[in-house]
Every structure is written in structure tokens, then in C-alpha cells.
Image (tube, rainbow, N blue to C red):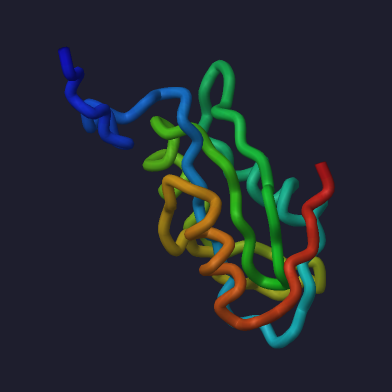
Length: 124
């Protein structure tokens, strides 16, 4: 008997353990470099209040852009929390916004490379 082929999407339902990759951008900068500790502290400070905040991890960054890994079910909360006006490392105010999310890291890396700048690895 031939079995039906299993599609890559399977049943079309989201796997709750599957990570999503969220692109975040700081607007209004002019070659100001934001470090991994700054990204980590910024995103931690805007976590939605909960008994246990959803985990996230800064995967890669490039000056004013970052790719953040979040859980599939926490993308809406992360988007809501991470669109804000923040104080940068130089003391000036900057607008931080989430750009979009991807199901694979490939699409997120392509977005980050959009300005043809090198991709430094984030500190883990």
C-alpha cells in the first residue's frame, strides 16, 4: 500500500514548540551600534508581565537591527511589548519596532542582510 505523502506543513497547525524569528529595528539612528547586552536588557525590560515571562533569545544583530527567537505562541505579546520609544545607550530617544516574523531563520537572515552589512554573532 502506498502511504500518502506527508507535506512539510503536515496538518497546517502550528507546533507550539516551534520557534519564530522576529525582526526588530531601531528607527532614527545614524550608524549608532547597539551592543548585544543593550538588546538583551531592552527586550527584557519590555517583557509582558506574567508569572514566568516568555523566553526569548537574540540570535543575530547588526547595528540597529536584531533577530530575536521567540516561542510560536508568544509572537503577538512580543510584538505588542517591543514596539516602543526607548532610551538608547547615548541617552537619546529612539523608536523600536517589530518588522515581521519568520518561521525559519533563513528568511530572517536575508532581511538582516538587506543592507549588505556583515552579520556579527550575538553573545549567548
